[in-house]
Image 1 (spheres, helix red, strand yellow):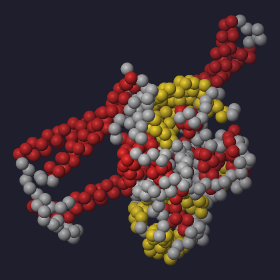
Image 2: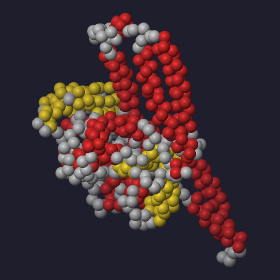
Image 3: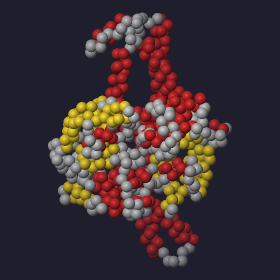
Image 4: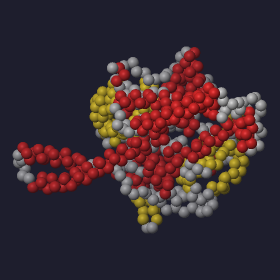
Length: 607
């Protein structure tokens, strides 16, 4: 049966990078309808595995089998374009198919790319990533391979992509560090750990739960093996050199036991308390600052007479669409860009630690540990305690062996992690982090979250990572464009919920009266307005009343079915066939609910 043949079947795949084995004899398959996320530490081969699967890199052994006649769409982590070609040419490699052009315009418009004749060299990194994404989606592939799809996308675009991938029965294999995205999109998680693949048939939350169970079981097995190993080691020492068959069998078992007993699990039992810092009561005051740029002949306003007084110990997030001025605001705070008017008044005790999107250029022939000890040999933890540079690196998941690697051997994510360590090692009391989550693995993000939660200074974070923002910040500046900035006292999830409620209220208030009369004046008297609208509504017919009652029952039934189906998909107990079938049904339920709820709301207006 063709439908039972997996889209991708990987058997006994091995890949080395020099003397390092990235993955060893791994096997997994992806069936139609599965949305698979791959997670692993930086430097363990996530992007390499993606490149091997796409035949952009070779491998030592194993088989990679795609289903025949399968159309695969591949989004690279850092797509490359000819800077001279237009957006349209970049999408179709100079093809001029009217239907494709129309589809391109539709998708690019949804991704906020409207000038199809603009040269690619004039686009920002985020805009180029959107063009690459559109290039993949336009072809309507059967199977999507996405390498860090949310990198360089703003929050609005990430939420759009999330919705797009959840519509229909799409089959996806992705590498991403975005935990919120993984949780919302994926129904299967693959973990690459210690050169081995582990499969979890559920979303990211399910993976966290089951991974913890796996690690607890592994710890228990290692402890049991260590106890047994000590007894067997004593037996080995007492045995003569010449051993019988039974003794040799026991000796072989001893060496297998030794492998298990000497396994190491990277497990930090304590949180690192951030280094001792002092910061005065005055932090900074943004005094009626204005800033605008000339954007191809048009004035682009970033700040318009903006005032803000930053509080001591505040941890603020900055969010907004690309191009609204988030990074410019940070550069003005740091003195790298001057405002047109107004000023930033910085407190005397403030010492900034700045982590930029651009990163830091390292000497490739330098060792990791030497990069850090050039800054300091240790950091002061207070109370007479200190942490050495090596211990600090180990806390951020550089093993003692990795600390003596040369920089040129590090992956892109490992270099970003090392850059982060150089910022923190300087002992700042005000951290300014511009997209710190890009290219960092999930384990490092968890370490950084803990560090920032305990940090005794001030923090500003610009990030598209919703999970990270919810963990770290308690306050938002929302850059809306054209100089409009909203001050919101909460985290990102709370802001999105508030925004949805506001949009719903505004939509309700904007609805015209049913008989064509003008709506009530917007004078703040919401109750009076609702009363006025009520008077203008026509009454339900008998047929519409029956339809309304029927819809109520159907919506309740579909909601219950959706809840049950989501629980089954996250249970980890389904076969591949059941997972495929139920994955098909879930988007159908969502579409039916949307349609029925829309009609239900129309009828409810007549009640």
